[in-house]
Image 1 (cartoon, rainbow, N blue to C red):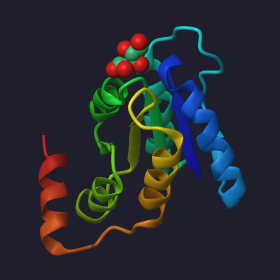
Image 2 (cartoon, rainbow, N blue to C red):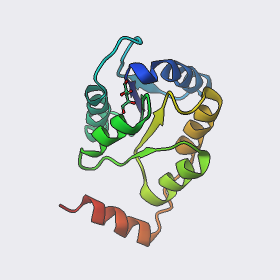
Image 3 (cartoon, protein in one colour):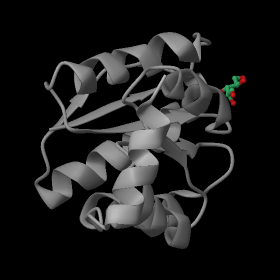
Image 4 (cartoon, rainbow, N blue to C red):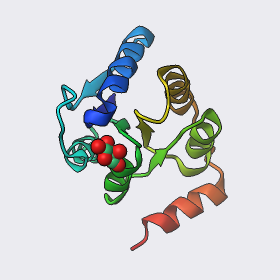
Length: 143
Ligand code: RB5
């Protein structure tokens, strides 16, 4: 199950992404927001990180205007590895190397065509399971 949320800056792109997930037959839960009316992105980041931490969802997609604020907020939560991606190379690498569990996108940065390719790359790329990457992730998780 994929948890998806956005702020007003990511609302238009989120609608494209949800349509795409439906076309792919992928299950998702939409945690808002529901319009282009201004909201506070940390609230929406927290909805998705909570869904992942509880096990309700295993991956997340967060979108704000730049993708920066919402990824900063998500990464405050232990166990969350949110990767802001603007291309398919980084989307693939962050799954393989960082086992990122949230993809962050900037709705004012990437167009829908590229964003959907980034989403597919992120969702379809497994973690490498290489010892060096596991060790580095463990180091991140240490206090
Ligand atoms: C909202 O105007 C904007 O600040 C927000 O979407 C995001 O880009 C913050 O990092």
